Length: 152
Image 1 (tube, rainbow, N blue to C red):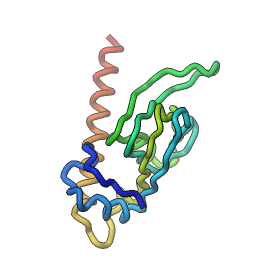
Image 2 (cartoon, helix red, strand yellow; image 1 turned 180 degrees about the horizontal axis):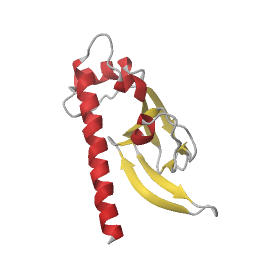
Image 3 (tube, rainbow, N blue to C red; image 1 turned 90 degrees about the horizontal axis):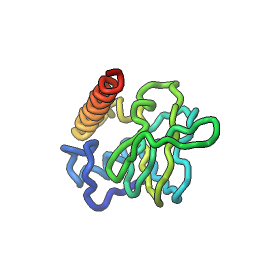
């Protein structure tokens, strides 16, 4: 079971007390996996059912073309999440790949457990859902702004 230990600032964890975080990860059956520098964390075409939370390290979200060239879409650092949009839409396949830029540890949160409140009605569970929705909305607005600039 993942342990957060030191306080990691993250929009996903705002309002969740440090002492609640380990219990939250246990409730969500979180999985912690370490990746070596240069390793693929997720590949284009993968079906995703978990939100990736970078515990330690740095990852790049990239789009690869037919010739193997990589175009950087975004950089995700400690305390940030990735693949949340894909995970929230069952059956969708990644149109990008996620690669560890340095040795990286990721906590994977099963999106079904995140979006379904547990029987013990944990306070932090509701906060986590609100934080996730806020993050998705913020990313959506940012993409809309980029689209507006590109279309002009």
